[in-house]
Every structure is written in structure tokens, then in C-alpha cells.
Amino acid sequence: AVFPISLLLALISSVFQGLQQFKRFNLILLLQPSLTLIFVILLLLGGVDAIEWMLAAYLAAALVTLIVALFTVRGYWVKGEGPAFPHYGRALLAYGYKAHLSNILAFVNYRADIFLVNFFTGPAAAGVYVIAVQLSERLWLLSRAASTVLLPRLSQLSSDEAKRKRLTPIVTRWVLWITLAASLLTALVGYPFILLIFGTEFVAAYWPLVLLLPGIVLGSASRVLANDIAARGRPELNMYTSILVVLINVAGNVALIPGHGIHGAAVATSLAYGINFALRLAMHRYFTGTPIWRNILIGRSDLAILNSLRKKGGKQ
Image (tube, rainbow, N blue to C red; front, side, top):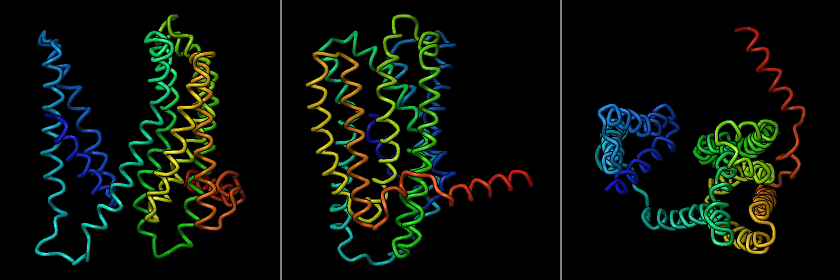
């Protein structure tokens, strides 16, 4: 019952993303989980804790959010026929199925290690490993936010290749280095954090977390480059890359988990994310002619941006 509602919410959210109306985008994104939390708290305060009622709370929150989303998007409906797009449906499907398959493969890539850990070592080890995966993937918040903003912006700049070629490397390298700094902090505080929050039973998740961090850092920058490729109307290249990386990830996990357990799974997954980044760097170099180092290394222009931000902050 929730699925069609969630699907429609995602489609409406993408309208606001495409229009770069991020206040409304964030409203739709945050409203449903916030309402779910409120409804669940009210149920618990009323002494109701049955799982069916929790699911009902989730469904009710989705319905309310959908009503708000439909009301919000109504102001963007085109009156009358609107502009003519020759063969629009065909173009939509040709782009959409490639992008969707790429997303499915990316999901498989992100979760293949968990399924294989469970298969080879059992649910107890998988439960420990999931802690490492979930904590490490929190570092992707920045790259996901940047990608959400970047995709419609790059699409809008389709007629201004010079600006697009400047924008993507700036975002890529900043996301890369900020995520690297966050990963180093995570490595420092990860052990006491896991011990404090999850207890001694889960401290074994610390080293898999550390082994996942290099792949997480490279994967954050890879996501930015993938959006640049998608904005150029070539989502099939992301799909092909995802197919190859999934095969590498699965093969690596199958080879390493039996002998090394969850540590092997973390190494294989990190390696797959690194290869994904290398492939996306090569594709971006092919399309734009931009030197690879510009997507990685901080330069004088970045220092100038930092100095400008510092001066603006000082004036405020």
C-alpha cells in the first residue's frame, strides 16, 4: 500500500530537484520521516506497540506527505497544451530505463557484500558488518547532497560546456577532500563510538569500518562524476560501469570472505569502489579533456575560493 505512494512522492520530489527548488524538495524529503516519528511516538504514549500500527503510522505519514506534495507542485502545472516535444515519450523511456538500471546495479553494488557475508559467515557476522557499513555510508551525506544539486545544474548548463567543465572538477575534489577529512575523524573516534553506542558485542565492526573508508572516500567523488555523465545524456555509461563494478565486487567478496570474513568483505568492497572512481575519472577525461588531476588535487583556485569565503565571513 505504501509503495505507489512512495513512488509518486519520489517523482514529485524529482520535479522540484529539476527546477532547483530545493526548499520544496527538502520539505517533501523531510516531512514523511518527521510525521512517522510523531505518529509512532503518539502510539507509544497511548500504549500501542503492535507492528501493524507502526506500519499504519508509516502509511499515514506517507499519505499526508503526498497531499502536501500534490498541493505544493500544483503551482508548477502547465496550463493548456504546453510546448511540443517531438517523440518525448520515446526519449523519456530511452533515458529512463538506462538511468533506472544503473540505480538498481548501484544498489546491488552497495549491498552485495552484506548478502555474501551472511551467506558465507552467517547472520551474526552480517549483523556486525552492517554496523560498519551503515556508519561508513553516513560519510556519503555530503556527496549525495552535492549530487542532488549538481545534476539539474549541469543539465541546465548543457549549452555552456565551459562552465560545466569548471563546475564538476571543483565539486568533485571538494567532496573528495572533505569526505577524506571526515573519514580520518571517523577512524579516530570509531572504536569508542561503536563501544559506547552498540556495546562490546559490536566492537568487531571497527576494523571493517576502517577498511571500508578508502572506498567510501573514492565513492563519494565517483557519485559526483556519475551525475556529470548522466547530465550529458549518457546514463548508459554509468550502467555499463556499474555492471563491471558489481562483477568485480561480487568476485572479490566470494574470493576473500571465506578466508578473511568481514575484513575480506570490506577490502573487496573498497577495491570495487576505487575501480568505479577510476573508470568515472577516465570517462570524464574522455568527454571533457579535463586532466584527471583537476578532479583530485586542490589548486590555487580553491584557495582563492576559501579566502573569499573567509573574507565574507569576516564582514558578517
